Length: 269
Ligand SMILES: NC(=O)c1ccc[n+]([C@@H]2O[C@H](COP(=O)([O-])OP(=O)(O)OC[C@H]3O[C@@H](n4cnc5c(N)ncnc54)[C@H](O)[C@@H]3O)[C@@H](O)[C@H]2O)c1
Image (cartoon, rainbow, N blue to C red; front, side):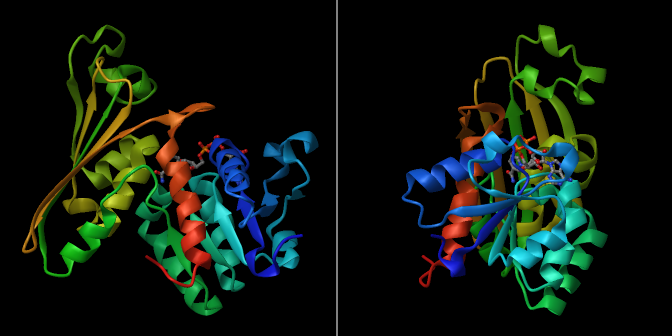
């Protein structure tokens, strides 16, 4: 029986959502998911749902009375559903953080949360060190730079293909150099991490981004470097993929679980 204060629903039921559900189950079902919202064209089969309620319409989900909704779907899903949820007083966690690169959407979400007295939380996802950036910017940050390194395969189907022969690369090669605004536009699949860094630090225009294709790496690597009045900071992550989905970092799925636990806990440490 679900604790009514922890009535959690998901938007989307792909790799992240399934990994989260399995992980919450392994941790003892203190925070169990009860429902999913997925438009009918993406609907999973009933056997996949394992007893979860399935809604196709956001108004049905609101009637179900979730205490927390977790978006694990797409930038479009944030745009379509999250303002309505927030306006209806439902706290929402989003994993598609790259959607917040759209300033107009950010303003809509802020207004909706104010109107509904609800709260939107963006997960840290595949990246780390955001707490340092947020604290440090209070005294002024001079520079923030993000470097993302992936195997050439991971950049297939991106504008990198126009300038580099990814299939025959033998050494580490820079495929993009610019700011977070440009990289989010050209490399939307990478936009979640660069958006998280930009939002925690000095914004999309001022955040430097370098993207690298390296045939010698097997994990996705993320480096964040910052300098400011506080001193300087550098962090590097080597992320393993989800066991059942090589395109998604395991850490990103784990960060959703952490955000849920922190949402319900009385002592946030
Ligand atoms: N913050 C991060 O670091 C980070 C890391 C990896 C992925 N992500 C984001 O998380 C999201 C989910 O990733 P995933 O690996 O689970 O993807 P996935 O493709 O495996 O699953 C997405 C699910 O959402 C559903 N969906 C698609 N569009 C929808 C819509 N408009 N409304 C409702 N449901 C919709 C699909 O049917 C599918 O079930 C993506 O937006 C991805 O960019 C964020």
